[in-house]
Length: 356
Image (tube, rainbow, N blue to C red; front, side, top):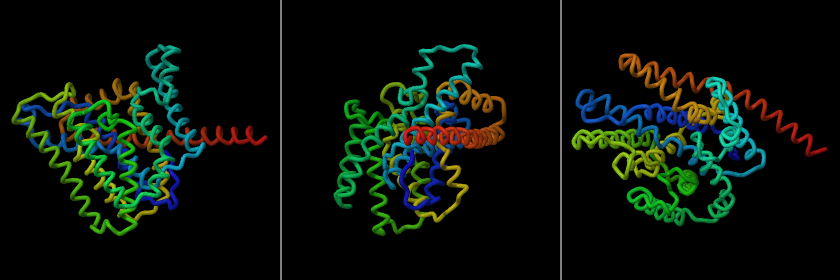
């Protein structure tokens, strides 16, 4: 996920870090069921809070694509190979770690597991993003010549189709897949470019506090809607069928698109330059690749979060889960330095071989 950024602006690097924290929070909230009528009756504030943090974090992965659209992806062999190396590196490391814990392994499973775009191990984002990378030269050529007005009209038409047939009716033949797809990323990529044009033309004049208020208000309203729906209908919401929860958790949920757009604009208005922030940002993908790996997430990450919640009083549990999130983040960032060191050695060795 390496883009050609003309100026190393730490505000967007900070956004990557915040987005990854939100990704972890989303996967923490997945460990719990959507508050039911009984839960809401007993603890209304806690129930709404869980829905609020779920809503706050669900669209966080989109922020990475908006950043890519804002600066533009420029495919280079090194950046592409670096991304693939990073994905495969963690797939292999995690496979052997889990194999040692369980005391069993399988050659066929190992080969399948280590394919970076096999659609498993939580790697849907990698597959969708690689698809976007491959299409980016065409998109860039088009975006370079389109006017601000025409791009605005295109985005209106695009998201009208997305919201009607990709969200309301969930038509499988359009390829939006509730936002888990390259097709959905194309819209976000174009939206990121549009936001850059708006910024360069002085169209985003409101203060960052305005966009902060909009972002939080959207999530608060959305969480309130789901909480009230569960309370008044007394319906136990699941991800089966075509119900309210399926639409609410969709990555093409209109409020979610508006939320990530507002949050992105908010960070675009922050003035920040920090080598430390940039250093952390360069390794944030490792956090996703480790904790969302299916061999890690389901048997260990999610179960540990549930264990904390079941064995401690609510306030203490929230504190411990927050500490757990921070420790996971720090551990992944530090371990990724090993991956970076190995990758640099591998790349330099390959360069020496090809230039002999």
